Amino acid sequence: MLTAKISAAVLLFTAPFVPQPKTREFHFEYTATLKGIPAGVKHLDLWLPIPHSDEFQHISNLQIASPFPYTEAAGSNGNEILHLSVDQTAAAGFSVRVSLDCLRKEHIQARLAGGPPLAQDEDAAALSQYLRPDRLVPIDGQIRTWATEVVAKADAHSDLEKARAIYNHVVSTVRYDKTGKGWGHGDIYYACEERRGNCTDFHAIVIGYARALGIPARFAIGFPLPADRGEGKITGYHCWAEVYVSHVGWVPIDASEAAKNPAKRDYFFGAHDENRIEFSKGRDIVLTPKQEGEPLNYFVYPYAEVDGQPFTQITSEVTYRDSNERTRTY
Image 1: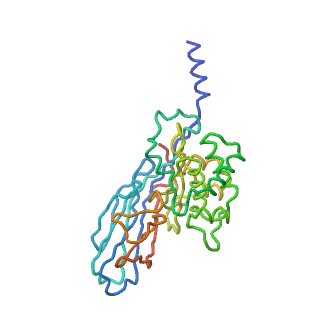
Image 2: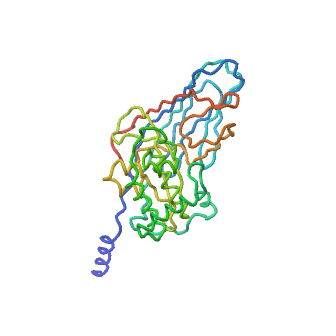
Image 3: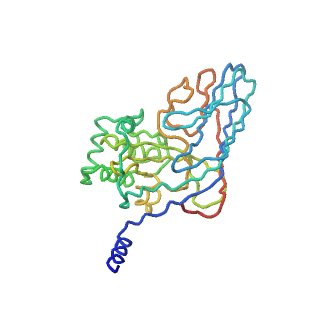
């Protein structure tokens, strides 16, 4: 009996500590307004991203206010898309409002803290899509050379070590800076040469270097919420990344937040906090139904075409309201 108690105590004190994920519940509204629609337009298409439910966020009470009929369709990467198709509109402008409730869960990769390995990795064929280049994140000889130099300098050998080396390199050498021109497109060559930018630029390097070394990596975009609970407007988007490591699974990464907050550098390799809402995954987005224009670099804001041509006179307003003042855990 004493031996059993001692064994139980040893297990208690040697088991890895895995924090319980935090959650956040909030009401969210997203309004797209088109202005200055030319007279005589024969056809107008408008697409809006709709946040989806998954393991880390639950969307409920979705309501759409639109002056015209609309459809909802599934796009690539599990994205959900709202589409308006309007013939011969007489309106010079109109608005579409999307409102919803979201329960967002902190994404913590517990296996990095010593949890049991995956019983089975994801299918290799399915993961291969996350090794392909994007238009602004090519996987060429120069990118492979830079990525190889980074992991060699860190003496990284496993995929997990390489991913951490890439993350550390980006956080240490890229500055969060939205001045001047060129930032915000997620252009890996711009980010590598200028060593500055916003979240799209940080994660272009993370994703491009990982893919160049054969590590699947993917992109997601949505909106950040202030850590303090309350309500207000959200003035810009946020994006983040994940890399896939065998026997571990998807590892969440937020290099730009780590650069802005060095005290959380360890946290943001292996976690995404609950202060965000995801709208879509992937880049070079082909919409449903397919747009006439080029694939979208990323899809977080509304996109419209008038008689088959891109229409840019669109504004967006994004607001949130927390449904409680306390963060609760699962």
